[in-house]
Length: 56
Image 1: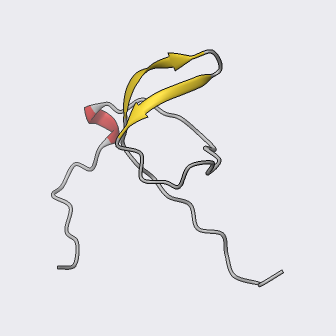
Image 2: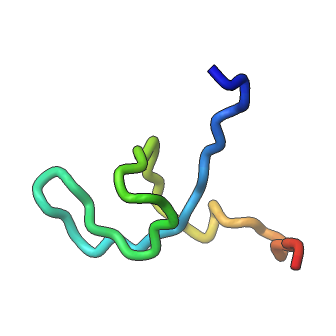
């Protein structure tokens, strides 16, 4: 064990459809085979209420 924390990512995707037990999405920022831990809908109430700032 390396002792480093596991980092979780968060990405907004568009669901295009499903193929049996798999979802087909566009815009996922992950490597093929990466486990998905949770899915949530995106609604305006869930997004930041103030402008988001990020480094250049």
